[in-house]
Structure formats: C-alpha cells, structure tokens
Length: 149
Image (cartoon, rainbow, N blue to C red; front, side):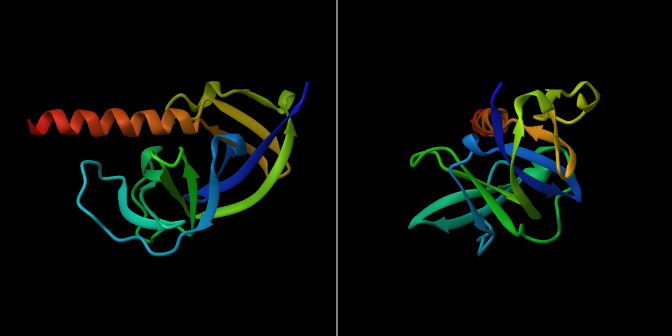
C-alpha cells in the first residue's frame, strides 16, 4: 500500500498538494528580479544556492490570475542544469498520506496539471503534477522561440 509524502500549499487561498519526491527543495520567496521573458507567468530570476534560477508563478500556470505580490515560498524543481522555482503564496505543512487517500480528480478537468485529489488533515487538496507543469513551461518557451523566427 505505502504512503505519499506531500507538501500542502495554498494558491489564491485554495489548498493544493505537491509530491515531495517531485521537488528538490523549498525556500522562502526572497528577492526576485523581474526580467523580460516569453511567458507572462515568469516572475523573474532569483538566486538560490549560488545559482540563478527562473521563478514562475505556479498559480498563473494553473490558470489563476497573476498575483499582485511576490510569492512567499518557492518550490524548487529540476536538477542543477534545469532548476526552476515555482512561487506559491503559502506553505501549510508537510504530511504523509496513505496512497489509498489519493484518487483521480474527475471534477478538476478545467484545472490544468491537477490530475488527482488527496485527502489530508487539511482537507481535500488537488495534487499538482509538477512534471506536467515543467513540461508545459518547456513547450511554451520553445513555441515562443519559434514564433520570433
């Protein structure tokens, strides 16, 4: 049966979860320097562990309106060469749930990158597929580059 380790976060006040195994870290938001880029969800560049990392709004990537304030937390994803930070407004908790408490999210079809729901002590949370989010960023950047040619 097993368990899943989840980080419970908030986006526009809504509860979501991400699998801890899909993350390479979690850090306070810190300073993000705006830069021009091909995607409106790009918040800018931030320095993490001595390297520059692009920071994106996870909420905007999920279809929420762009927040006026910079994110309080950054979810770190990817390896050393392709690291990305995804900004969220709030980190609620780390938790473990039985895999049986995660199910397909039939009622979230209009929310991209959220294929599952998890029952946690914080209530029912949409489970964000970080790999799907990163693939969408890569596709959209590649598409934007082709449009400029």
